[in-house]
Amino acid sequence: QVQVVESGGGLVQAGGSLRLSCAASGRTFSSGLMGWFRQAPGKEREFVAAISWTGGNTYYADSVKGRFTISRDVAKITLYLQMNSLKPEDTAIYYCAATLRSTMVNLRSPRTYESWGQGTQVTVSS
Image (cartoon, rainbow, N blue to C red; front, side):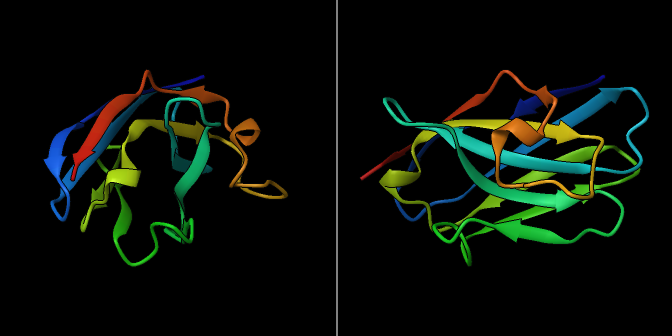
């Protein structure tokens, strides 16, 4: 099992930026996928972005494409989410997720991921 811990949330004005981090530990994570999901009050958890750990291929939800950038530091086993041009509708709890699988998976589905962080709150004021 891989453990993941997020950090970096906070309060920001619309148009501002934040960077989230997610440190992975536990079982050696040398392949698979890591991703970011978010959940706003009263809504289902939704896909934000994902990255293949080996090749670095990135995937984004349409709602964040062009504003958010997912990246990873392989040596530090850390995932990042750079969020720019933030909007009030980006307000949510952001979760880091990891799976050791990388093939034949729906990377946009929360059910694909075995490991989840506790979440970090991102609030964007208008």
